[in-house]
Each structure stands twice: as structure tokens, then as C-alpha cells.
Length: 427
Image (cartoon, rainbow, N blue to C red; front, side):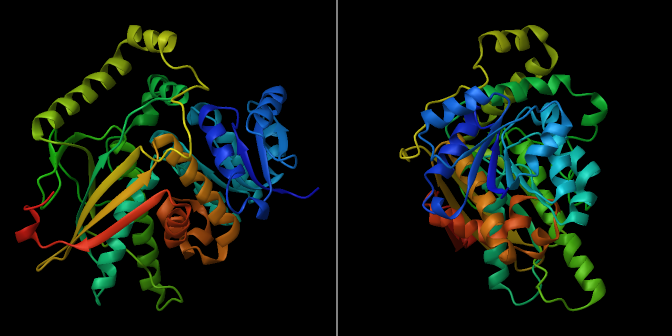
């Protein structure tokens, strides 16, 4: 039996439905086969009817708690899109099966502690089988990874000598809404063993290459601007993904330099790259109070069981979330990244990135296009991607993903040189 090109696991969940809908309506839909997988055959059938899926969309029921069942369904696909969370609780067997069977994989997790486990246990195996495994391919953490990458790429084009970046800061602005799955993942943090969270505050937790540390703060500002803000709710994850991208580029560049010239130029950010991000607000006061609110809220969820009980009882239930429509692009996610080169006489660039859609729509687009990039553009991917392993969106997919997102019309961006003496005149 022929393999299905893309198989969406957890398709009946809130985000899984959006991913399935996006792929079913994709302009190149007639060039790839699609399947949906989940625990309930009847729910998968109902989803097929609700979304008016093509008759050739395969239905693949399986038992996520049985590795044999997981392995059997995984081997029926070329690329897996996994939407089954909380990922630490459910999805390790899916990655294990993919890594051993050379089935490429992307997911929508924002669980850094789980990604740490994947790197420890499956990175080597995935490299042996040349399997591309890319966690955090949704709103966590494609926009942040992409914004830093675009600025780095623009600076690389300006400089004839080897690129060495210094500080890179991203301001992020979006409308906040929660699905039941997001809430369940947030609440699940209290169930993680302390040993698995050791070192989680280290922004370089997901990479063996260590860089410069930055101070923790409650009020942030974008360099050479009048833009301020507070803690980013996703910053703790996004910073680790961006730094893993940096670490993977650095490791490859160092390996290339040791063995001599290579057929691919070893693009890198440089040893002194230091990334941070924040949520943008109109002034410092709003940023301060937002930071305090985030810290108090997370502490309450982590330390107070009545708060967790209340949210579990009265919060958004798994499978539900904000009403979405792919045609509605009035909601946007905006990122502004400022990156500078390191050393004397630095260059500075500012990259404005806009995703047209709310975080869940953008998640469906980014994870869907990531899967399609692996399926259709494998030979055009960076060498890091082709080699396989537990990777990041930009280290594995690079310009290929950028082009696909631009063609989707859900992404626009512009990059231009900053002149610090003039940049505070405009926001």
C-alpha cells in the first residue's frame, strides 16, 4: 500500500482541525496525499464530513498509548504533523517511531522541557536515519526564529567577511487567545518532575554551544527606537529555539572549518550572538505591569493547586478554542527585530515581520508549510536539514520555508538598514 504524503495526528483536536483544513484547501492540494489520524474512528469520520474533506483523505485510527499501534500508523506516512499534546505526556512514542523508521516529523509543541528530552534521546538516532524532526513549528516558535534569521541573512549579504552578530532583539505584538490544548499544556507543567526542569532558565538549554548571557528584566526596549514592553509569554521557549538555531549553525560552521572547504557555505550567526524578545506595549508602565502579571500568573499556576483546579474545571476544554477563519486576515502577529553585528563599527538592520492571522491560524500555516517543504523541497534544504536530527524551523528549512510562507500570502516582511542617530525619530 502506498504511503500517504502527509499524516496529521491529533486531527480532531482544536489545532489539528485547523491544520487539516489548511492542507485540504491548499493551492497545491492535488499534488500530495493527505491522511488524518486520532484515537476515535467515529470522530475522524465526523471531522471528514464537517470539513468536507476529499474522498481520498485517509482515516487512520490508532492508540497513542500503545507503541506498536503508533509505530504502525507512523510507517504509513512520509511526513507526520503531530498535534497531540501535552507532548511530554503523549507524543514521545511518535518521535521515537519516526526517528527509527525515517519518517520526517514536525509538530506544534511549545514544551521546551520535552524538546530537551528529544534531543537527549533521539537526536543521534534521527541523524543516523537522516530523519528531519522539527518541534516547535507553529506560533511557538517559527515567527521568532524567522525574524532573527531574516535579520542575520540581511547582514550577511552586507558583509564580505565572515558574519559575526552581537545583540538581536525582537518585539512581538499579537492578540491573546487560548485553546483547551494550550491551557492543558500550561497546567501540565506542574506535573513535570523537577529533575526534568533543571536548568530550564538557561536560554541555551537546548544547545551544547553556550553563548553570552543577558540580564533578566521587567521592562524591555527595542534598540534604536522608542518601543518598549514586558515579558513575552512565549519568550522562554522562543529564545531557546532561536539559540538552538544559532548553536546548530555554529556547530556546523566549526565542523566545516576543521575539515576544510565545503560545497555549502557555512552560514552562521557568530560566537557572540545574544537573543532576547519581549511583548510590545506603548510605554514602559504597561510593559512593567504586564511582566508582573505574567510572573504572578505563572507562579499561581505552578504553586497553588486551587488555581489549577479552577482552570481545569471552568477553563477552555481540550478540542475547543477561539472561532477561526482562514479568510479573516484582520488579526495579525507583528514582530520587529533589530540585530547588530559584533565589534567596532557595527551594522544594524531592522526587520518588520507580519503574519496575517491569529496565533492558531498562523500555527496551521507554518506547520503545514514546514511539512510541505520537507515533502517537496527536501533537496533544496540546508545541509543541516538534509542531515537530519532534532532541529529547528530555520536551521532545517531556511530560505525554503521563507519562500513558502511568502507564497502562502500569510507572511510579509521588510528589512532595512538602521542609522542609530536617526532611528529614534520614528517608531
